[in-house]
Image 1 (cartoon, one colour):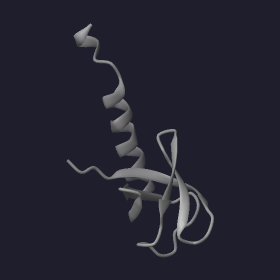
Image 2 (tube, helix red, strand yellow):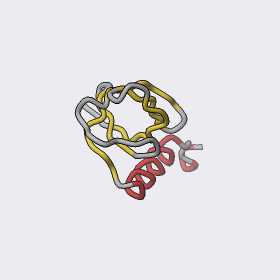
Image 3 (cartoon, one colour):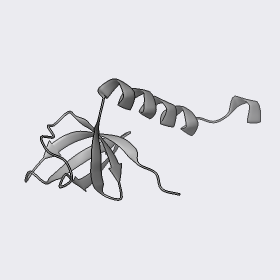
Length: 77
């Protein structure tokens, strides 16, 4: 299964590489497939490449859903 994850761009350091934050985990990714990415933008990341810029509200909703899935199920206790 392939999964692309929304991430916020924290730092751009050579125009084609950036550090992104994915729910508290920071990772270096390539920006080679996108133009005009700025720090603070949200992007979709797959296998180390930012594939697409993402609307900030949509990114926040998706990250909130991921965080919700990570919480323990109270019905299972």
